[in-house]
Length: 423
Image (cartoon, rainbow, N blue to C red):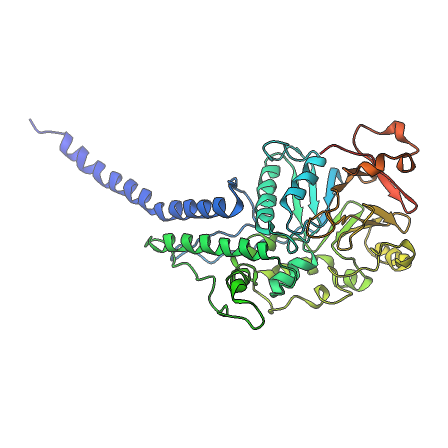
């Protein structure tokens, strides 16, 4: 009697071989993902980033023969009114103050630091870089929150400040020793990861991040050269950090009737096109343009440098120009900006058409106490503050009975109306 098992076994062999081959084909991608996670964990101070479903995300690794990358979708410039929006000013390399601000807004768990803001929207108005030593850790942390928020129906929007533009251009005048050390540590881990990937024949040879970076710099002490080189490698256009994190930043944002920009907008900027500005700056960050940023990001009248509406003395703010700019943006009622430190906290001028939210909270600035701006829907604005000075009678609101415990109200030009929140 013939054994019928032999043909069956022979037929099963190709299927098994095909399955094994398919599994082996996935090994390079699995290895690359593992290495990326290992490097991220080491650089970020122990963070694991959730997998993302982000059309704007760029892959960390490429396999030989992969199809060309599709063009990323346009950055979203206009958003409808949000039920709850929190705007946070300049962070300047201070992770501790960053988390204090987020706890103040009840967006993160006080213990774990995970997103608990539900469907809330967070807008960080730029200037993560310089003056502090936690720049990369803040980038990673905001990216972690972006992914966690997305799973809960929330949104995290990050923006360019003048210091992001400066660093991509290679202007490190305001980088600190700790900041240089942080980037030098990133470079060490990143290169270790590349060496691990280079051992896998199924992966494209990793690009040397230091390709084209000078070995030395005039007027830079030898002890800082490695940090300078690492910073250039990471942040130059299409660098590993700039393309991964900064390419997601907006330069201009409109949410409901509020316009967000780091420095300020002039009528010429609006005429040029807000969506066009966002697209061109992203293309520049991704290495598709010239070495230097577009003109509207450079100079005293640039969108990230302008101070016409943020001078601490209200009478020096150009309210008529602001009014004209807002009339050119359909539905806009106010402009919200950072860039200029407000020593007495978040405030509004020009009949609250200009809201200034940079409180200099970083220890590298004036070590100001954290404050954030809360916007509910299209109208209600309040300040959440940890500053005990605003508990004094002269700062109390005339509508105090309408307050929930904790939050304050947007101050008029003649006096703040905040109350203390325990962060």
